[in-house]
Length: 303
View 1 (tube, rainbow, N blue to C red):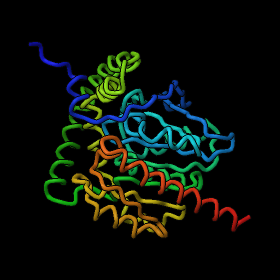
View 2 (view 1 turned 180 degrees about the horizontal axis):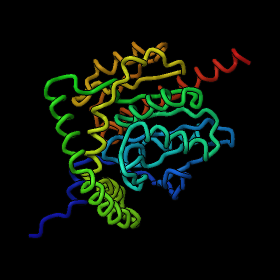
View 3 (view 1 turned 135 degrees about the vertical axis):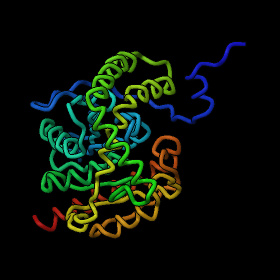
View 4 (view 1 turned 30 degrees about the vertical axis):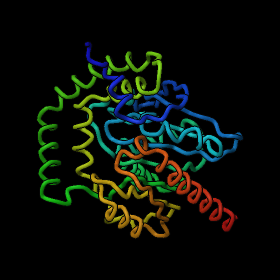
């Protein structure tokens, strides 16, 4: 009897929500490169805009596809692949600072007015830096499955330092391999899959292991503890309460450090944005609605 295909195994083992995937397009960012953008309009032309930033090793759509339908009932939803991920910018180096500047560039090019930036895991780190590097450009933050720094234990420090040194030594090779793999994967992703499982598998394959290693090394250098307390825009933290990667306690500490940050708990693990979306999505929507409401109240008081 023949063995089942990988998409068939994935379908049987993983509960991937069946949703309609909106169409995307290439977006050229002058002086930076091009990335794959999905821009879903809201119910009105002046609907608040939300920029969604994805997790490491994923694409924008792979992290966020379960929430788009609900979001677009109230908001304009903007998603793009970050550097070295999926069909994102392929640069000489990978840095979280560059990723944050990319978000600002996308916002400017699309003409967004003080959008809310929401990030999951790696995306939440980039979102923090969006405020740090562009403090007047964004209207609020939603940080899901987040942290203020890594290397909090001996094993974590060893892992990130080893990754950083090895990636420095192999930068040229990693870049060439990543480019080759990404080019091949782009063709695969552009195929029209017959179901969401096949699409999700293609999205997952579109980011090379070399790119993931670069991103992990960069994340290991992140440390926002000294300046989190200075964040002065409405912020919400979605705590993934069963998270084994970034502990819920560390996530709550961030919320307690950012002035006025609200806490919204989702009883799921680190992959809950997709694998437990029925739990994650309501908590995320609550966090976003709260942040947008606080932003509107602030504007009303100053007008």
